[in-house]
Image (cartoon, rainbow, N blue to C red; front, side):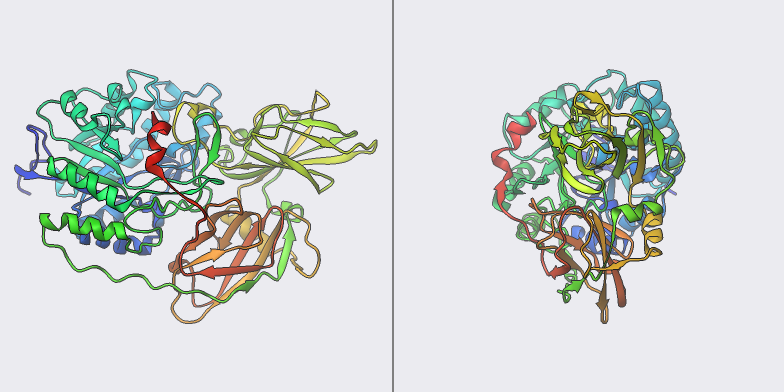
Length: 602
């Protein structure tokens, strides 16, 4: 192989292999897009006029249990990078270890929190040891795909927006050396918002900026910080994420293209975050806590140029027209067909209480134990889903969570619903009785915070005592309900009841979707249902919740098959009996993110 000169920053312009180079990038996360659609999404990125793919690498998915690594099928990172190369795209890799990405705990595995002294994103020995073990597995899988070795990777990011965290002056140097020592030789870079640039740099690493509007002199500030260096907006936010119970965020397509045109006219390289957002399937969504906790929805549509299901939007066409002057563009790939299937009646149900025989052996303790410390999943603890805590009470009165519920608890007495405990409601009154009764709390991890100073405080379940009439309750039995494939498979073998019988909530409901011919994408609607989880053919699509803004769940065609397809809906409160389908996603109220973004971030 002849000598190849990688991406260089010797002047105000990038060069690649010695020739001037402009990064025109777009972010698409392989873990948010069904693998059969990777090619479709990357072809659409290239057809829009972009030349570079950027992706995060989620540690929590690749090492779900300590020492257990997953790099196959949906998580085959090497195959994703090879595909980018095959299609003529360059790659900027963002391996973390922390990535934010609106993923649970910012992409960090929850088993790190089993260490009660854990200090995430620092040089604390417990954290660096875990990072080193992970990088020992990850980096060799991508090092041979670097540009100088004939691959498409032209740059690698050192951590992510550390200037907004900045708890350890030695940490970024540790991450840099962890990459270099394992064979990373391409350009290293960091990214931060305007304020984070002050603390987010490390010697010998190019700083880049994240923004949406050209305010506060952000680009000039970056130029002054690094004279005679090329400028890169690593994350140009062309939309924003959503949280449960608040409006759907949008950002004007005209405003987006106006900012991008000005950046390009000034010679700035760009990367759109997101070009295609996709979906945070299952329980992978994160949360925000900038004074109050807010759980993020499963849709990661992000109001991006490609919609959640890969459709072209007005933003896509405006962006393509803007980039047309840089190169001759290929024809647009065809749009994926969709189908509105006939409504499905969920004719069978089984209560949560009956499903407990399908969980791993329950655990008993005098005091409640948080999810991460439960002795499950080969002693890596419970990462996601629900945990049921049960104890015996002999009286009624004031049940107080002492703010130890993370994040939402349904309270039952002898399997009858009594109320909800969460961040806003920390006390409910239980009816009086002198007889022995079983108190049950079904506690849901609604998503660990993925950004900000609260990262170290993201243990879930019951994280301390709860009291009845000011006396701490004791002698708990705990059931891990993370709704894994094994649990769902075991659930099938139980005797389900007809929905003609009144269900005892919470409950699982089951029905069959019959697909004739080639399966197509669709969106699931659950009018009249309240809150829970949707599982199709064993795939956890994510949460449904009547508070919105997400009123539909994306169901990719490749996850269906011709013939019978099994639908299971876990419902906490009230089932309407039918599952409906739609051709397009549905959201409630919308709000323009540009009006509130900067007061949120700064």
